[in-house]
Length: 319
Image (cartoon, rainbow, N blue to C red; front, top):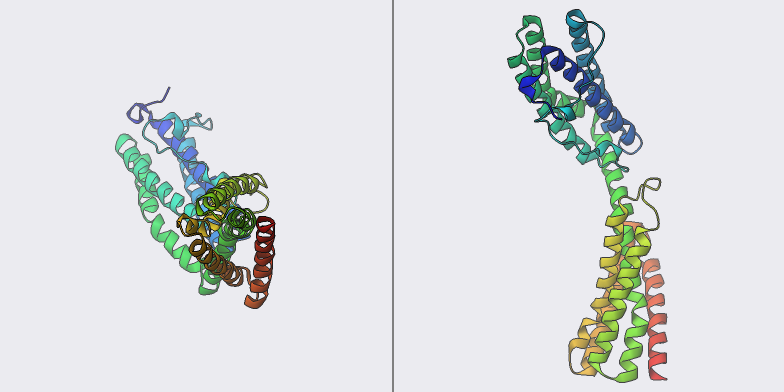
């Protein structure tokens, strides 16, 4: 059963403060460890913050031992009403650096409120003085974090971390989305145009194209989400990757399917062909922009594949 903060004894308040500082320090340490390879400057900042929390804990422990001895009651924030419910962000891999910084700010705000309320509750003058000092230090912690950020996040470090952000964006969003777009734009050409040239009916072609696009999107979404959980590869959440892949696959197929909503078969086929050309050029540009592939090389690879699939559909549909 949760205890009310007003019912805590001074011994329990000090024990809870020690536990809080211990936990906060460990969280900062986890942040530093998770970010040391991709965001080394930010990792150093969190390591410095961890050391500050260790200092707070040691001062509280000295006060506790002077008043109550060496045995510290086991009481945690989750045993007391009023504390924020913390998500175990430090267990996430890869850890998003901006999320870690935001989480740290919330931790500091909560610490300030805790020490202010604790100082109002205790009657022992030295303990109240210590708690007020810690409240002031936690209040200034945001400024300290800013100073640490300026110290550790130099222009060069920020440039390196921006590059890391770009790499993570490529791994988690662009690459899965690009794979889906390529699959949807190319693999649906054969069934769509086979149906179109076999029936010469726009509505029949549209239904085949719609089924192929949605089916390919579902298939690619599941395939990507089940490929790995991102814990070792750093490719992020499988749900996000799978969703990006599935949506882009469906979008790639629908792009040249929608023109067949037009009743005039020849006009619909002409527009669909133009859309296909635009899609292939767009894919080539994305590969050039985000994957550092020479534009002509990317265009050749994509266009040749697209033409081969289109010809397959045309030959099958016309036979």
